[in-house]
Length: 331
Ligand code: 5GP
Ligand code: MN
Image (cartoon, rainbow, N blue to C red):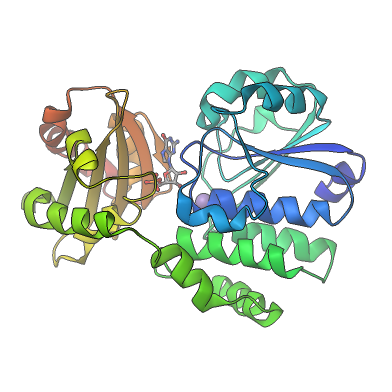
């Protein structure tokens, strides 16, 4: 069955995305929400946890639910749903505590995503293209296939997802990405406003933290053309850190000549470490993450988590490179 035919048979739709929602997660869910709302169905977005403040303008009426905060109502909606649309993730474990409730639900399930290795077994329909820049770019084609009219609020959300997942049109972009962006601008998207909201709306603390990390914390591992930054809880408190403030930090070391692989390790409240990995050559951080960081993602942008003492994260990263550099070198 096609996306269109499943949607046309559904009356209570729940849209979900992954934990630590980023621009593509919030962009794709709000784009789908606005697209479906215009068709007169009951539709809600449930995210596992809160999105960063700089994306709140995409959720104008504040109707997005966070499972970690709104568990009761979220469970009711999942229970009542006859369709669940999963966006911007490939494996149900990426929705953490929501996973078992989604698995238990008798609703039809659709996944639209751009990560490799999708979990086909848990979904009735999987639309997965790992060659596209973002879930938002993929949604553009899906919407266009159903109607030539893309409303402005939908176009705006799509643009944000593409802009953020490509690190402002620098990574994973193809000519099609620019073609899509160009059409979204033609529809009326205000790119200056979106640029400013997403990349220019940070706090003073975030700028100073960035300076501190570059000056005092960034470590270059010359032998492997790699670099890493470890961001402790203590530093987060000192610089009045809030969710989303570290967005883009992992890309900074990649501006150094000779650095092709970068890692950001962020100590979380529960003591676990969130891992962000990037590469700008044929080194697969997806493989590295699957082998050593309990995660995955794309070949050049991946993430994961670690449960080791925070102080040992640097040596753990060096050892991971030492053990697996050759295996990961080659996409
Ligand atoms: P980020 O570093 O921006 O958090 O994540 C980069 C990419 O890796 C994103 O596409 C994201 O979906 C993926 N990713 C992040 N964390 C995880 C994880 O724990 N597991 C998997 N499989 N992918 C992840
Ligand atoms: Mn994405």
